[in-house]
Image 1 (tube, rainbow, N blue to C red):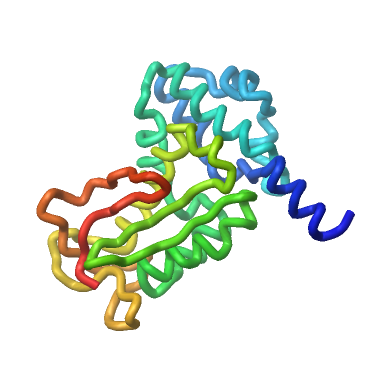
Image 2 (cartoon, one colour):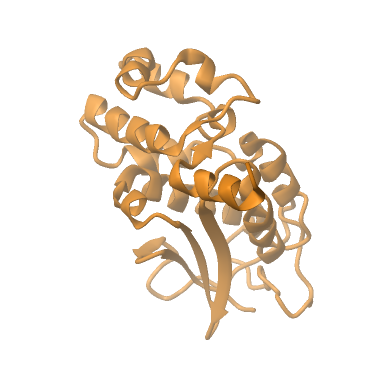
Length: 216
C-alpha cells in the first residue's frame, strides 16, 4: 500500500490509543456506582483496550464510550467531571513532555506536535489574540465533532494543563509568553495569570475553547 493510500485509510477510519486517555475510567465509574465493563461492551470495546499501551481502537468507539458513560450515569456533564479529575501526566509521553515545557504556551504546542502519535485525524493548536489565549482542538471529520462528552473532556484537560503551570491564579506574572519573555515551567508553581473580569471559565466555541484573558 502506498503512503498516500495509507494516509487516506487512516483518515477514513481514524484510531486512538485508549490506555492513556481513559486512565482511571474504571475507578471513576465504580465511585459513582456504575460498571465500566457494561459501557465498554456497549461501545464494542474490551477491557484490554483500556490497558494495552500498544493497542489502537477505532476513534468512533472512544467517542461513543464517553457518551454511553454519560447515559449510564444520567449525567450530561460526565465529560467535564471525568476530565476534571484526570491529570495531564496520565497522557503518557505526550502529557509528560508537555509538563516538562518551559511555558504553558510551549506545553500546548507540544501537545499539538505529538498528539498524532495517540490519535489520528485531529488538529490541536494555540492562538493569542488581544491578550486572550485560545486553545483549539478538532477532528478533521466534522461528524465526530458532534460528540459532546469528548469536547467537554478536552476543555477540562486544557484547564488542568493550564492549572499545572499557572499555580496561584491571583498573582500577576505572565503565564503564556510567545515572545520568549519570563515565564515559569508548566510543572512549577511560579507561573502567573491575570484573570479575566468575567472569570476564567472555559467557553466552548466552534472548534476552539477560550480559557480567559491573561497577560502575555
